Image 1: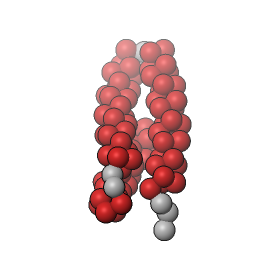
Image 2 (image 1 turned 90 degrees about the vertical axis):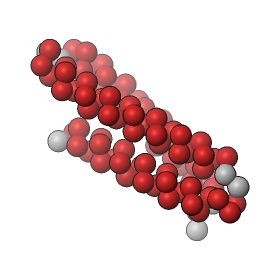
Image 3 (image 1 turned 30 degrees about the horizontal axis):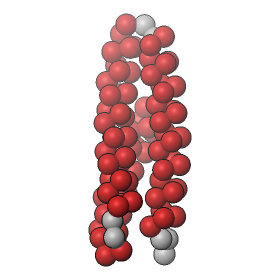
Length: 92
């Protein structure tokens, strides 16, 4: 089973990649036309909220002691699933 430090490290790296991707999406939305900009902005705002939730869950996991780690890991996994789904939806 993966330990807390390894799990947190992987998640931090993924959040960093998603943050960069989100920055690129924001830049793309700024260049888009007005109608496209409004729709993309809604998706980007949703992604930003999900990224913030993932950051919060990860911070909780990072600070957790051994016995709480299993419970908090579930919350992190849930936040990750939602964030991955949002990025995939935006691609389509």
